Amino acid sequence: MKKKHLLYLSLVSGFIMCLAWYNTMYLGFWMLAALVPLLKMEDLIAANREKLKLSSCAAFVYSYPAFFLYAFFNTWWISNASFIGYVVPIAEAAFMSVVFQLYSYTKKAASNKTAAYFFLCLYWIAYEYIQYTWDMNFPWLNLGNSFAHWPVLIQWYSLTGTEGGSLWMLLSNISIYIMIKHWPLKTHESKRKRIVLYTCLPLVVVLPVMCSLIMWANYEDDSTESVNVVCVQPNLDPYNEQYYISSQQLVRRIVNLAEESMDKNVSFLVLPESCLQEYAWEDSLEFAYSVRAMKQYVKNYGSCGLIAGMSTRSLLPYGVKTPAARPVMFQTDRYYESYNTALFVPDNEAQNPMQLRHKSVLVVGVEKLPFKKYLPFVEKLALDMGGTVGSLGTDTAAKVFVSQSGKVKVGVPICWESIDGNYSRQFVNNGADFLQIITNVGWWGDTPGYKQYFYISALRALENRRYVSVCANTGFTGLVNARGQIISKSGYWQQEVYKFKVPLLKHKTLFTLKGDMIMKPFAFFSLLLIVYSVIKNKTQKQKK
Image (cartoon, rainbow, N blue to C red):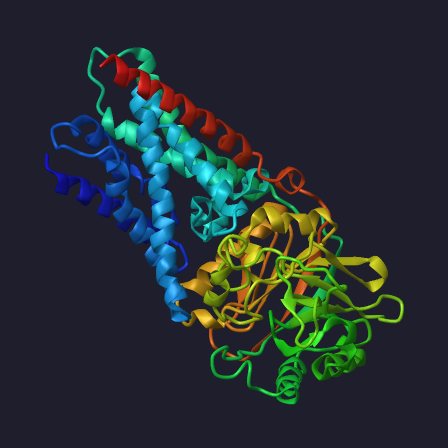
C-alpha cells in the first residue's frame, strides 16, 4: 500500500458527500455511506503508520481533502459576494478534520478497536454543538440537514431534531463499514457475532426509516383554524437595485404585486427580510414613508396585519456601550445600535401597537464579526449581503407577534435564524401557531445556496409540527406543512405573490419542549474521552 491510496479513499469520500448534497439534496441518502472510505483510510493509517512513516497528524492530513470537497461544493456561492467566501470551506474542512484526528487518536488508545469506531459519534456531535454556540456559528453543513429533501424518511426529527439525524448517519456509516469489513464471516466466528453483523447493524440503517414511514402515515395535525397569508416576492437585485430604488418606487411595486391576491379575508401581508430600506430610527418609525404607506394600504383590508423586514437603529442611553454599539457623530459618550428587524403592524394598531423583533442568530462576517472583542480589526472585513453591515444588536428572546386580539401568534425567524433549529423552536415554545420566515437570498445568485436554504428551513416545520411559510426577496417563496412536505414554492428571479391558507397548530413536540437532548451530553463525554485518550496514550508510550 502507498500513501496515494489514502488520498484516493479521501477523495472518494468527499465525492460521495458532494453527491449527497447535490442541488436540493435529493441524493441525501448517500450520506449514510459517505464516510465509509474515510473509516477505511483511518484503519490503513493505523496499520501502516510506521511502514509508511506517517506523522501523528496523518488522519487530519488525509481526511482534509474529503472535507474540503464537501465544504467547498456546498458553500462556494458565498464567494459571489466576497473573497471571504473562499475562507469558509478552508476553515470548515479544518474543523471536520480535527474531529477525525481526535477520533483516530482515541481509537489508538482503545483496547476494543471495533467499539472505538463509535467514538467518532461523540466527537462529531460535539463539533456540531460548537457550530451552534460559538462566535463562528455555521450549522449549514451539519449531517442531519442531508435528508431535508426527504421528510418522509425523517419524521422522528420531531423527537430528536436534526442532531438525531446526524447521529443516525454516523451510526449508519460505522455499521456499513463494519459489515463490509467482516463480510462474509468465517465458519469459526461466534453465533453472537453473526447476530450482530447480519441483524443488529442493518437495523441501525433501516429501523429509523421504518419508524418514519409509520409516523408519516399516521400523523394528523390538530388544526381547527387557519389564516390567509399573502407573501410578496419583490425580486429586488441586492447588488444593483435594492439600495438605490426610492421608497415610492418600492411601495408601488409591492402594492402592484399584492393587489391581485389581497381581500378582506387576508390576515397577514408579508414582505421579505430588509425589504424596507429607509434605515429609520425606531422611536420614529411612523414617519418613515414606506412604513406609513404600507400601514395605510393594509388598512383597506380590515383585519390584515403587516409583517416586513427592515433595517432599523436605536439610540442607547448616555454612557451605555454594548458590543454592537456605534458612536453617534458629533456627540461624546453616546452610541446607537443597528438591527436587522422584523416589523409587525397588527390589524388593530389602536388596541395592539406596532411590534418589533431583532434578528438574534447573526450571519458571521456579515452581521456579526467573530471574536471582535479580541480582534477589533475584523470589523473592516464585514460583507454587504442584503442588510445592515457590521456587528448588529440582538434580542435576548425569540419574540412572537400577536394579532387579532391575541387569537393568532406568529414566529418570524429572520433568514439565518431558520438554520438554527434550537433557536427556531423557541418561537413555538413562546406560543407561535405557525412560523413565517423572511429572508433575502438574492446575493447568492442562481446557485444551490438558495435552494438548500429553503429545504433546510423546511426541517423547522417537521421538528416543531408547525406550518412554515417562507417569504423571500427572490429564490424560493413557499409553504411547508407540519410533516415537512413542501406544498408550493416560487420560481427564481421572478416578481411573484403567493397566497397561502395556513392552519394554526397548538401541539408541541418533544423536540420543541426539550430541545436537542443529544448535543450537550455528547460534548461532555467527548471531553472526558479526550482526557482518557491522552492519559492512555502517554502510558502506552512510556511502557514501550
